[in-house]
Image 1 (spheres, one colour):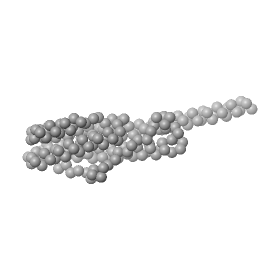
Image 2 (tube, rainbow, N blue to C red; image 1 turned 90 degrees about the vertical axis):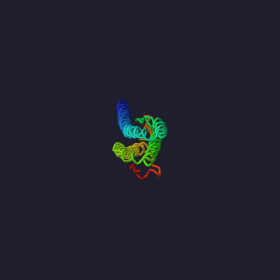
Image 3 (tube, helix red, strand yellow; image 1 turned 90 degrees about the horizontal axis):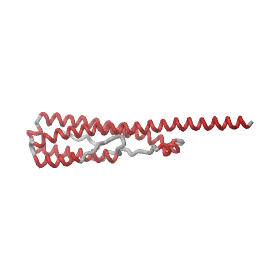
Image 4 (cartoon, rainbow, N blue to C red; image 1 turned 135 degrees about the vertical axis):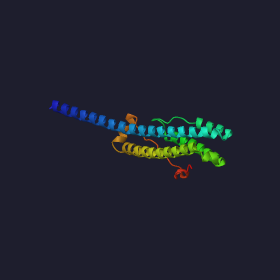
Length: 184
């Protein structure tokens, strides 16, 4: 009788350990999906900054003061990686919005800049990157939803903190940014 009890207890312990390993693997997978989605945002933001740098070179020939101001703004950029937060992304978005606004103001003051083929191509690229960033933000928020929903449910909310998997913040859209800006 004692061997049967020990066998049952051992079987229960093995099942609990296997269950814990399965839950831990699923939580790590969800967490890595969020990290990957954040990295994709970083790649797209980098591309947008590259397009801005190209525009910056064009502006230099038209307005040296504005070039210096824009150069200082763009230097405030930081890399967005898998461990970045929603606040980091929002800060980078604000830098880009400020720079684009200044570039558009210079283009309005210099119609020949606005009609420059390179300027138009770079603005089209910037629009393309804007769309990609918006799509990446949607993927990120969907991925965060899956992670957050899972780790709030029983029994995952017990295991998640033990595995270091915590809720993530969503990327938010300010009311002023709900419409795609015209970059023409």
